[in-house]
Length: 173
Image (tube, rainbow, N blue to C red; front, side, top):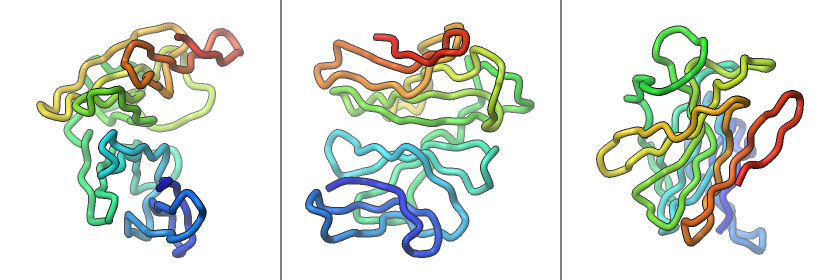
């Protein structure tokens, strides 16, 4: 099955569909949330997605939903911002772009302090790992130009992510 976001029920929600385009099934149920970057867990039983209850400009949290639906649970609600860069006030942490390697215990993602914005200062988005067993978060980058949208090779030997350099976006391996 494929996972995607749609407002076909009148509000944006997480959906799955068979690879042949049949049997769409709604996973999340809500009328005012926004979602981004859904990703399957390696076992195919759950979906991790970035979710916010507020309009664009808000902070996203990583949420875990069972593939068959249910209320879901926040994975990053307790993130107090240790190691997170950015100029936002307080400890609001924005979490986007979940990715898994071969060990489903560790969830890679990009995070920063403060809400979404365009033309933000350099080095705000950085990669982190969430240990799903302990709940601990480990910052992984502190790089000029930020670090965003991680992807890990199936064998776990390679990490690729987006980075900004001057006015260009590129990939770092």
